[in-house]
Length: 323
Length: 249
Ligand SMILES: Nc1ncnc2c1ncn2[C@@H]1O[C@H](COP(=O)(O)OP(=O)(O)OP(=O)(O)O)[C@@H](O)[C@H]1O
Ligand SMILES: [Mg+2]
Image (cartoon, rainbow over all chains, first blue to last red; front, side):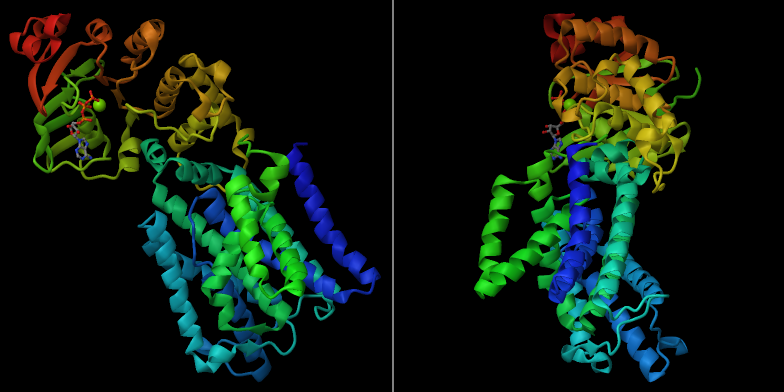
């Protein structure tokens, strides 16, 4: 087993072990922290498909994260009130339904945003994805039906067949399970034909076109898949907080996801997990000491970019190996 | 004579005031190596770029196997059978040599929209790619990252990639450049046999290779074809001697 795989396994097991230890030690808040790590890691795993594999620096993934959150909030609020939604469809309290709707909605939004923004590259791509996300943000702010800037509460966490989701440990296990599925899917994508084309597009799209593969559909597909995965994380995040507000759609959120990936290791399978763990731990520890914790996070980010381009995974496991 | 595989008619391209391609017409016939020679900056690479689609011509037509391809995107032209190498090697730098060729094999097999099967366990990809590497003598370097290959090895890899496609016409932009005399000799022998697979439009400064290989030669100067003919005709053409060959002939 390669060094990176061992590290990946250790990370996965550690994230699983922490809430059990916290449970035994009577520290329920730590379970919430671990759940937050799992959800942010899932969101960043989604972004990593576009950013890490495809080199598409989307500064607008909060749009997909937030849309996932709003789908969870809106479906559950309609399920409670009994009022029909768009086209007379009923709401739902079922996570499985919520996730599917979140993926569908974010997929369509990703398609629309991708078709337009993928015509550009580099800084323009960053700016256009940011602009689209800001449009979604302001739309949510000014939409009173679903709380506008006050956001929308989820009275009771959505349900999962056979599980009491209100118990922190159970909800953690759901998030952890979904994260594992997300990681396995992204591992499969990475080593597949599609993944080969996507990574080649990042390295040299002229070469890819010269062998007869059109780069645009490859990029667009990656962008849409990436949006869909991030949206599921958004739905879970809304269920974790039992609340969704425009802040999930704000550019801070997009930036946070990019930061997670850089901290963990861009394009590394478990980079998002390592990054999310570092981020949440910093936030918790430094945040308890000083309100200026983001200043110190900035320093750490700077050090990572200057001295450890491969992030935490790169630091421990060395450079990426392509089979 | 049989219909040309690739036919370029009256192509024009200007960069501002500079006429990089000025009414160029060139045919490539089945089984032939057609060399394109000319001084630096004559517009040879620009012509190749227009055939492949990375540069848009101002006017003129390009037909491949009877089909007008002048307005198609790069990838579409490649799928129709244009196999090119770049004057400045253009590879997926982080991938191994093998994976670079595998990408071309995958493209030739059709869809890249398969999301679950690992490529490294797909014998139809690895075997075919290994076979192409063997043909260009690069098998021993299959697992070396492309960016770490030597200059000459990168040129060989470019050819291996082109071989992996279902090619109707090869467009090779200075494949010998930086190869060294021994490498050039081996490659000359290789290209000599390659013409049976598909005709080659060969841009090359190495005159020994050109004279050894070419069935016909076109001479490009300031974006214009000043002469087209057999090796002997071109060697003895006074205008060509003055514009390009000098005392080399
Ligand atoms: N994108 C571009 N914009 C402006 N000028 C260009 C561009 N590409 C090429 N040129 C100019 O067009 C002319 C032809 O260039 P080209 O690269 O085709 O020459 P070449 O015959 O391949 O030369 P060499 O033998 O040195 O490779 C040169 O003067 C070059 O500077
Ligand atoms: Mg050139």
